[in-house]
Length: 133
Image (cartoon, rainbow, N blue to C red; front, side, top):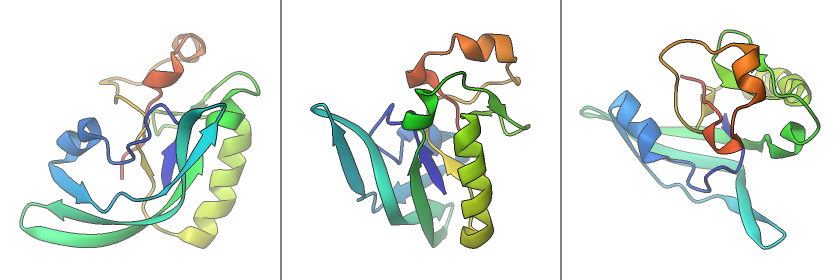
């Protein structure tokens, strides 16, 4: 599952790929346009993920967290270090039961240490965090 806040329309961010020493191709997805701006990718995508000599084809579900962020405070989601809103957390719980595939967030930089709720309140939307595998 890919959770994209729209901070980047590129759902295979090179910042993320460099973290797991992998290469990803096949990143076509539907881009949603709001007020003349591309805000996020949405839908199902299949990515070719190469880790070392092994190449895997993985399917991901793309969700947009931006509308939920606009509803209010953005809390941390458990211990995943991912910043999302409460309504989106409910959606993730429901979808993950049916989807049952790796969860992947591509929403910015991963912190070295977990961040507190106080720090989250002031986070720039373009610096939203992502989960791991």
